Length: 250
Image (cartoon, rainbow, N blue to C red; front, side, top):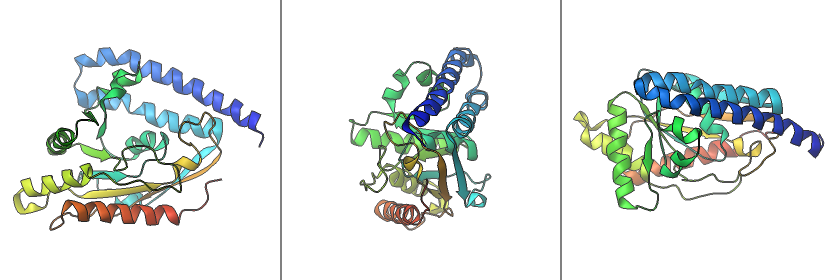
């Protein structure tokens, strides 16, 4: 497939993406009069639309392994690798309501940031060090106790396929904190999630490449008796092993 054809297809995607994002942003001020639960239900179809629109315009499909591992009645902490923007669109489509741990600068993005503020995110200053970690622990537990799921990318930034990044401790510390603060020390389960989306939607790439993205959902595990470092290592080991055995995307 020629570069020109890929560029044209990607342009159609970006047009639809921009228009749908603007629409979501424009209706966001009106959602201030509604509960955040209702706001979430109104806004989350934006993610599903763009996953579908990407398939229509650019031929980006996906296959999910382990979908039956999601227990919708037992909310938990999703720890996923981060390669692309694509996974941030898919994850809300397959899990119940999610609170994202994200950098607060995203709120400054016109339209997108306005809508983002209405879905109970945990916005942190990544330069704040220990205070940001404390915010993740306290606010994350609050969201979980309210019935939301919490999603964190331990790598902290998008990582190119084939490269490795240190996993930050925020998600593991949240899981451990919830367990130590709960009756019986069980807390909330951790759901590891792996994918290879960066091969078709590379970081900072205008062009989106046709193919099939593989998404693997691991079985949730209890953090009872585990220290934060052990939780982090368990997630990292599982994700990297899953990504390694995923088929080529093209």
